[in-house]
Picture 1 (cartoon, rainbow, N blue to C red):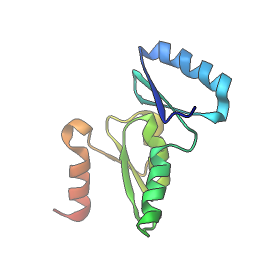
Picture 2: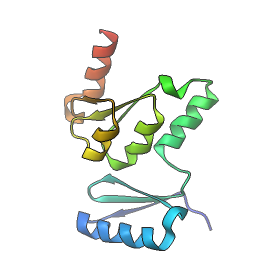
Picture 3: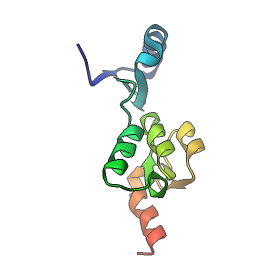
Length: 122
């Protein structure tokens, strides 16, 4: 059968071991992502926030290079890479910040709203 998503919740060291085991056994047949320190998601290889953005933009006839995406965790990396302008939240993981064009205040400080207000001059 087919599955859309499988999620494991455990302490980070347990998930790291599980992630390595699943990756070793299934390789590119699955997409593995951490959406929180204690969450490991296993999805079909074509399923990601980045692919969803590409599909949504195509359906609406919009140019992905003119989009802004915000993220904070590993599962947001494909989203940031698919967007024309990627923004990491201040509380984001280092790997996401490294791929982003800018950093916004943290989620707890309404960072998306603050960033957009700065851009659009509200």
